[in-house]
Image (cartoon, rainbow, N blue to C red; front, side, top):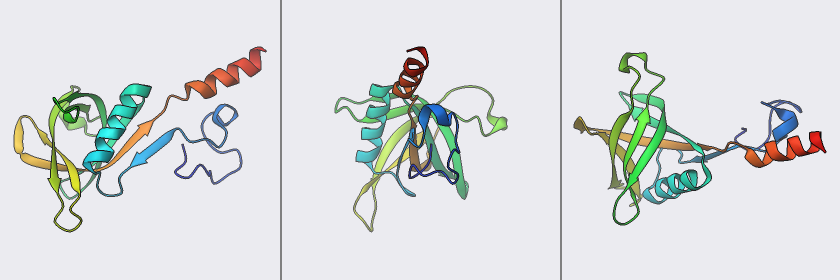
Length: 149
């Protein structure tokens, strides 16, 4: 739950007696997410049952959204995502579908990850960061085992 597993206070954090100083978060990207990072992260989240958050760049600033699902192409790469935007009350309560596209950065040569709304493919949105949140199942199991003997 802490970027470098170091809380500001000795006993800070949610359920400190369960998680201690261990982090449940893994972050990919630092203003951009490469094709490889994006695909590896989504596959890891799917395999381990992790929640996925995306930080996107839209209308001049960052915005956080939640991923609810993904489709993969014949090469096993993410081609479509399903997401909700609970941070924007104007959009209503429904799941959005977006195509994933990868474009080469002119400076670095890396393939960066973008999404395009299926209802407006002219709108290309940069995925700046991707955050995986583990449920902490192993920590909970150890905690309850220690309490119940």
